[in-house]
Length: 225
Image (cartoon, rainbow, N blue to C red; front, side):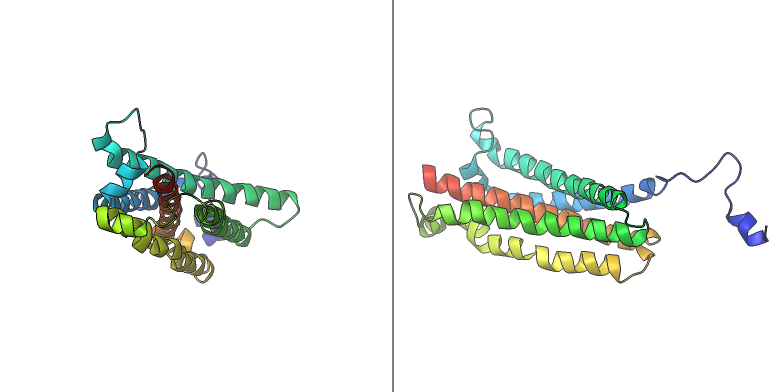
């Protein structure tokens, strides 16, 4: 055995573990979670009326805490979306190996890419199909002027920021897919790139969670107010 092979071989009793890379992903994931929480907190602080109109926890939460309950439910949805991406990536990888696809970094990249496109694209499309068209037939069909006059901060989120949130998944996907496929095996060795990729996953998850909250608020406004 050559000196290089000897040096690369793990010492007895310290064999490499398949999941050994996971601890190294904790910091990027933590940074992404904190960043998503900070951005969401800022958005909620700039649009408190929207969360009072949505009234998450009605009958259980005092009205003055509706913005906080809205933050909690959207943040939890964001974490659930990110966890769903991770689980879907692993599931797709497992199914592909069962189908005979050779294991390797390329398969992991493909699995994560497909799961990422599903994370951002499919939920947003579903929200607009389920909520967008039916909204046109609901009572109070034009609440925009009413919101602008009475709740300008809610109008900002529901009408001005809403398209930006939906469109944000496109540049986020470009960064994610570019960082994943155009850097070779660098994502496994670069903590900075791992953090960037984690931020894109958190960003897409936050955009999807906020889009659900926005559509739910619009439905609530048209049905109740």
